[in-house]
Amino acid sequence: MQKIDKIKYLIEKYKLTSHIEGGYFKRHYESNEIITRENNCSIKAGSAIYYLLEKNQISQFHSISSDELWHYYDGGVLEVHIIDNNKNYHIKYLGNSHIYNDAAFCIPIERGSIFAAKVLHGDYVFAGCSLHPEFIMEEFTLYDKDELVNIYPYHKEVIENFLK
Figure 1: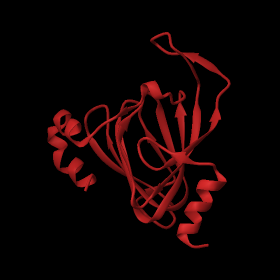
Figure 2: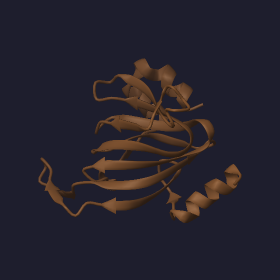
Figure 3: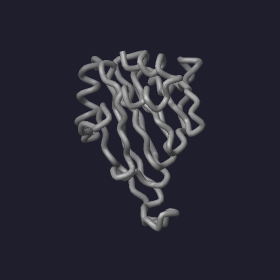
Figure 4: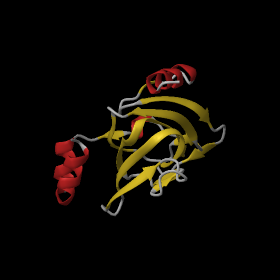
């Protein structure tokens, strides 16, 4: 199966739709357990999505109020850029660690971190993201380049390099 056909196949098979941050997704799991957050908001204990990013797309810098685990399923290598809660900038690689030494099958991202991703090797990456507690759109923040550079001027070069 050619790569373009494989991308189309994955989008159709898993009923993926466009994601606001870039790429395609489909929520496929929601916990039945309800928890109460510190702000007295009731929320499901967890959720999970399928996520696909093509090489010509980026997952834009964003943050959420849940811990997130990225799981590698298929494709190349995803380069994940993270500004953590201590304002440190990290790059992690999601992919087949048997093929790519620097890649991991699973990458944790702490809630409140700002992160973005792009395909480093290959035509696409098909992944899963599990969120604890569940993802809700009201707790999603999307950042543009100027906003990020104003907040983190000491990371200007790496932010601009990512967005090229």
